[in-house]
Amino acid sequence: MKTEILVALRMTVVTLVLTGLAYPLAIMGIAQVAFPHEANGSLVTSGGRVVGSELIGQGFQSPAYFRPRPSAAGADGYDAAASSGSNLGPTSRKLRDRVAADVARLRVENPQAPSAVPVELVTTSASGLDPQLSPEAARWQVPRVAAARGVAPGDVQALLDARTEPRTFGLLGEPRVNVLMLNLDLDLRFGRAGARGPAS
Image: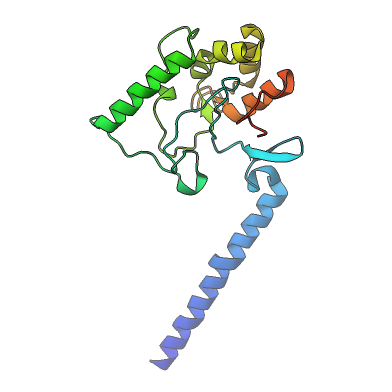
């Protein structure tokens, strides 16, 4: 019995060292060498300051910036430490009321928008942290952003087109736009536009 316990303890220690220390440290080292930007969180800097990550959405309040999907992650949304959806189902009155209020607000804030409010601008994702929008949902916001910045809509649309990413390998996923990166492009081209921008 004593021999069996000692063998089990040795195996436990060896397994712990191999799978709990050696393997994670080796993978971390390889990632730091091969993919340092991604391994360190795909952080985005502006003016020498970290302003976010390419992988995590954040809210933008100023009308001069594109806005992402709404978020239910944390009390104020976009909280990476509380990533989750709202868990409200399609029969939820609370969800219907929130979506109706968001639709009304977006119509007031975007009076020159060309069509109905895109559904992704009023529905949260499962994580609450999606950093991307569809090109259509971003295009819907172009008139508001252009008016707030006092520039031609075509100039804003050109930045949006340049920032649109195609399907991965031409067939996986959908075309998308990283909202943070697009807003940084706006600041680079037209200057910062006030509170709650990427560099605020």
